[in-house]
Length: 346
Image 1 (cartoon, rainbow, N blue to C red):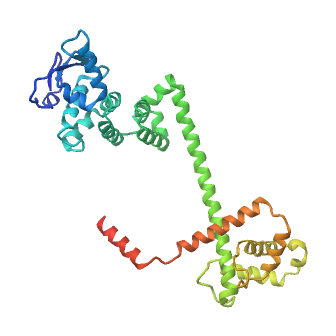
Image 2: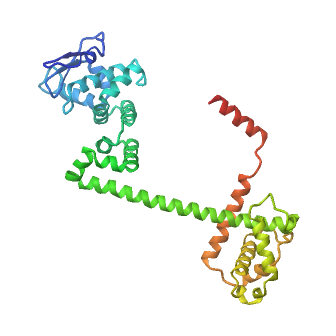
Image 3: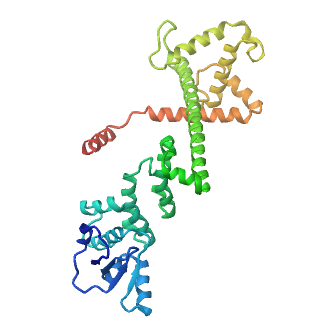
């Protein structure tokens, strides 16, 4: 590759791509009038788009096979051609190539997309992602959208959402507000959806915590009546809710209002009845279960038509109970040894 320059270009880039054996047979003209002499075999093997451009140039009246790469600075075009040459012999992850990528990553990303050089495009995306800041996030986002780079686009959007106050001060955001209303609405919609997702995730975590507490209460009932939990005066070391549940049962046993329908006006008795009822809906031990009122609430539940909310609650609590048992299950020694070996290797 040789560069004939009418202007002053970067001399380091001009050293790139040492001359190959055969003479150059393609001329690349850049926007500022520079001419790059290259080999059609290298360009055609690296890019199908350049191959078609070279074929069209040779079929026309232009006998010297001149093609044009316009819209980017001459140095970026030289770097692009240099990388097409270098990628045949040097990996794109080498330090020499990374220096060129860091210097012209935005222009190289656009050219590698336009001329369909996928390996170079991936390297350019990584180089651009490293240089992302709130000041250039909007500009890079637009380029990622034009160049069909979804991974880079997602990184830009996440940075915009993370530091939107700083992004609002950037020239790219001000330009978008004046000239690209659709992109502005797209970004604002993403921010709104992100806030909604955060609210949903928070609500789901809170719901899951409630299901976990209820599943622990079910296990605690079985622990009290089947395993024989110690007396009230002795604290239980197995379940945190055991002491509170025993106090609630003690009140339930002595409360006069529990005989009224639905527990009467006593909220604590109503709560205990709901716990017994929930246990009857989730318990799978038909004969061996020693928790009181199981058969009573089981029969009552079968006679009545339960609402969807109660059935969903019982299903969620049963699922949380299974997941809790799996999480607390002791791992085999072989698994622990393999994990320790893997961590040492890291």
